[in-house]
Image (tube, rainbow, N blue to C red; front, side, top):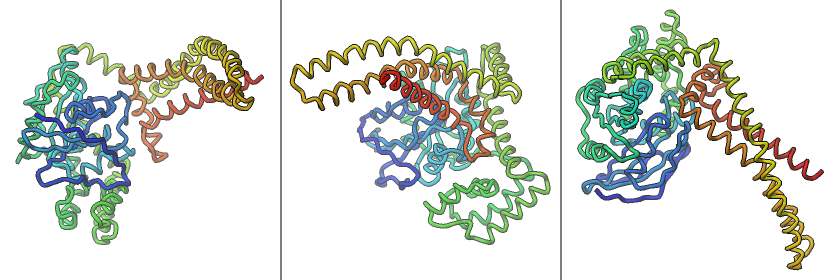
Length: 452
């Protein structure tokens, strides 16, 4: 195997998704939930230093690299980490659009072996779009430590796609993944994902017409589901990347309105429609995981479910979140007071010697004021006020992510945020934003104190 490094290329929604390629090149999209080792696999294969992290939505745009394996050139695209392809956020929209319109030869979905059930939801959504999928079950070493055994053969049989096990940190299994990508050929068997009968009837009523319009450019059945769901962002992307607007086809839109009217007669509105879709996917994920995952530590699994019931309950989830947020900020602000004072005293003790040195060197008065009272004093304020709380807050934030609490926060707030046209994951960036505002206020108070 030979590696060919290529400078990272990034492109967001406003850029073309098509990649310059020759007929011999094979484009591979690498997707997965946040914090499953997706970017670690990307770095290991391409030799690039794509920054890895353990916070949701780290990859905001698509990063690109290349490698050669057995004389064949592969172009890898690290698409944003996301829990879903329902386009409730920019990460989901970027990931969905590349899978739909970027024309990857294969989409690799990376899963966390320690929580396979949750990760399978993304696999099922991807399989609705394309059947050119390879599943990579990562973190097998971590799963073994937790006494979780994943039956990869049973998983491949259930999904009807190749499944490769890896431990990306130690680069175990990556050769097997590359060999699978080199020899990949789509399976003739397809995984059947079915929804409640009223929804299936509505899908069937408009799918034939879509097949004629889309001409196999994207999956007609999946597009029918999104039309019934009222997914405007997908219609905009179809118009942008395929060059035609499905909304302009009055006959098609009439069929969609008629199908939605039939669903409404059965008390299935837009919210109920999406809830039934999600429920069906979750139930399918649970069914597959139950057949493929053996957990020796049943007591730990039972404990996790009990914790989930408390942390995601409608009655206790939000109050616990508020209390925990207040606790984090109290620890951050209170804990930062002492190191801030020490840093402030240390850094400001050098201000007077700096002034004396500049005077000794015969700097003009304006230069002495600029360097000592301007640049140095401002730097001392920023470091002494900002550094200690950052050194406390971000490790605490990472700890909550490692414990699995941040996804539960996003789940609790998702319904409320959707009413504002956002998604629950944006609550996490609000936490960080609120922290930064607090630090700025502290900086203002500190600067006022020093001036006085």
